[in-house]
Image (cartoon, rainbow, N blue to C red; front, side, top):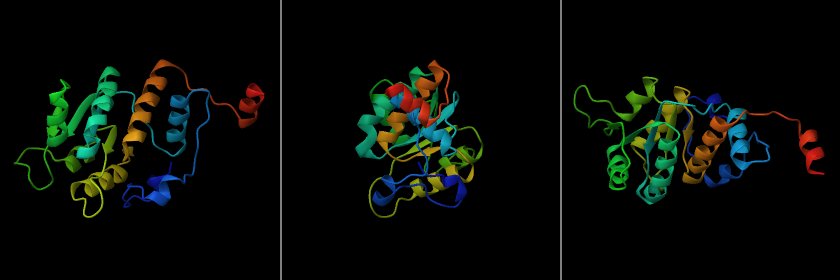
Amino acid sequence: MLPFSRFPSADTLLGPEMRSTGEVMGIDRDFAMAFAKSQLGAGQNLPSEGNIFLSLADKDKPAGVELAKGLASLGFNLVATSGTADFLKLYGIGVANVVGKLGETKEGELDAVSLISSGSVGLVVNTPRGRGPRGDGYHIRTAANKFKVPCITTMSAALAAVRALGAMAAGDLVVKSIQEHHAESA
């Protein structure tokens, strides 16, 4: 996990060379708790309640159903862009609030960046559509970074985060030295 909080105007989208690199790691007997620890180590404080914003590329929407069900089962409110919300609705998953695209909202409606900057979102999941201009996605990720809201840009990391949120809700986070972990496994 990279500490994007050190670069407030940076886009948090990881390129291929960055996906295999990180600055922190988490160790635990359980993958979910290890992932939670890695997020904490990178300064990404995963929320324990509240709103989670979803803006998923079409290719990620099928996996987004599992993601949304997991988040809802943990008691989170889902907020999404219209395309993501419409897809989730097909599977019976409710979205508490739907936000419009940047520049296309009517007066009084929130767009994704306004929602993030308002402080009412505890986590952003924004998966890019592929190469080329990414429009709203860039602004969403940059706003999340600027306002210190954890932002996840891959479906695999988002699904791991759901597992981490569940593990954190179910038990206490225990910190051990690497030597203690090694001694236990020997």
